[in-house]
Image 1 (tube, one colour):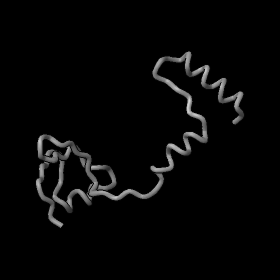
Image 2: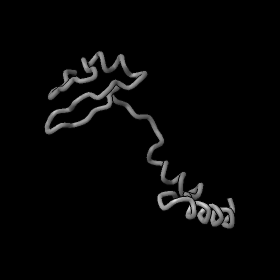
Image 3: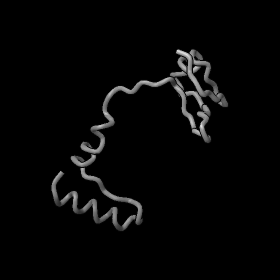
Image 4: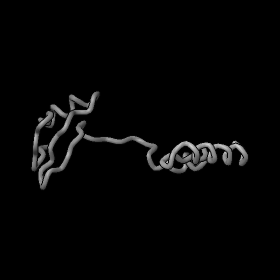
Length: 82
C-alpha cells in the first residue's frame, strides 16, 4: 500500500463515525505479532465472581478437556485436580 492509499483510507474512516479508525497493514501486522502462536488451555470460558471461578461454557472442540477436569456450565471450583 502506498502513503496516498493510507491517507485516503484514514480520511474515509474518519468520516465514517467517531469510533472507526484505519490501521495500515504494517501496523496491523505488528499489533497481531504477539498473538501468533499456539495457546493451550482446559477448554472453558469463565467468569470470576468474588473468589470463585464460574464456568460459563465449554469451548467447542475442547469439550473433552472440560469433561476430563469435571467442568461443565455452572461449575465452580476453588481447586483443580491434575
